Length: 154
Image (cartoon, rainbow, N blue to C red; front, side):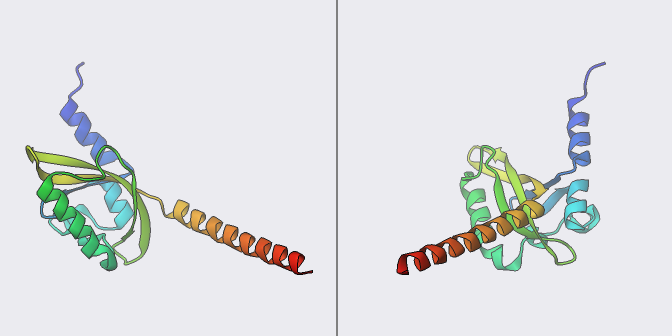
């Protein structure tokens, strides 16, 4: 039996545990899989047709849209080729999370983009663990610095 690649791709994207979101050139959500629903709390019915602003923290929106619009205008992104991005995001209930993602640009012609898909993973736990470790290291360094200062002054 021959594999139907279109059915395979659709089934894979719909079933992935990662969030898969596609936004058009205007930043309007046109694809929202089950992983995105679980991660952000919006059903496809609620998310489709909405701006990406529903998942972007308010304080980061201006920076996001500056980069997004520039990418749409130029057809170029410094995050192509599988670069992994880490950013804060927001859920439907307003809680924050940290996401890691890669983007896949969809071309509408030479140098022009039709939109961008993102494959996202919730990295909140890893981000919080890393922040705690950094804090511990800073406290350790401060303690060591005080010890060496006290030893030198004696």
